[in-house]
Structure formats: structure tokens, C-alpha cells
Image 1 (cartoon, helix red, strand yellow):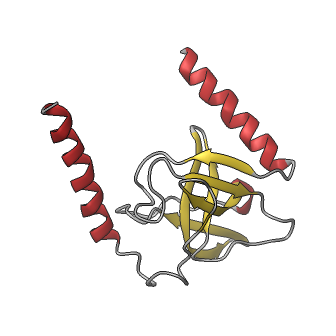
Image 2: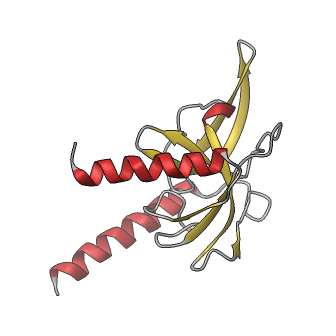
Amino acid sequence: MRTNQLNNLVVKEIGLTLLEEGKILKVKAEGYSMFPVIKPGYVLLIEPLEPGYEPQPGEIVAWKRDSGLVLHRLVRIFEKGGIRFFVTRGDSCALEDDPVTIGQIAGKVRKSGLTGNGSVKTLHDLNKDPAYLTNRLRVWLIINMNKIKRRFR
């Protein structure tokens, strides 16, 4: 295993442990999946879920996967075979994520912004439809404009 992968694994485990202990985690956003609400470089404060609390559609939750945490908006909840499943989707993603259980949800985003002091926009603050296609086109333009700029430097 490469050193960088090992470091990422260690940081992920420390972060998850802190959330499980009830601590608030401060992380820097990477990627464009939650654009324009959360932009790369934004500082996010993730708080653990209170015992017995169930996140509601519109909240941005952090759920665990092998490579780390995913921060996406909860879009719906359903029950199957007596188990509740939570479905998330990035605001600029083409598809929903695979359903997760409450045990996979590590916390919810409390604050975001360049300093981590800004309020987090929920579905109640936004249009009920986060304009997925428009957001994806904006991200595509940003990424390709950055590539063009780098070529001419």
C-alpha cells in the first residue's frame, strides 16, 4: 500500500472515531459533487448524529464508504424488510447514491463556507429540485475552463 493511501486510511479512521466519540469534525471539501452549495476548498463542520436522531430529506449528511466520507444531500428515505434506507445525491450528480443504513451515516454537515462559519443551505432554503442538470453543466464548464487556462500558462 502506498504511503498516501495509508495516510488517507489513517485520517479517515481518526475522523470516524472522533465523530463516534461525539466530536465535531472540521474538513476541507474536495470535488464538485455538491456544487454550488459546497465548493472545493470550503471548510465544513460535520457533527455526529444525536442518539435516536434520524436525518431528514434536505440535510447534507456524511456517510461512510471504504475510501472515506461522502457528503451528499439526503433526498429520500424508504423502508424494506423492516430496515430504513437513506438515499443521497450530490447536487450536481447525475444519479442517486446506493442506499445506506443509519449505521453508515457518520454525521451531518452543520456549517460550510470558506471559513466554516457559513450556514448550510438545505432543501428548505433552495428550490426543491437542486437543478442537477444545470449544476452538472456548470461544473463541466468550470473544470474544462481550468484545463484550458492551464494549457495556455
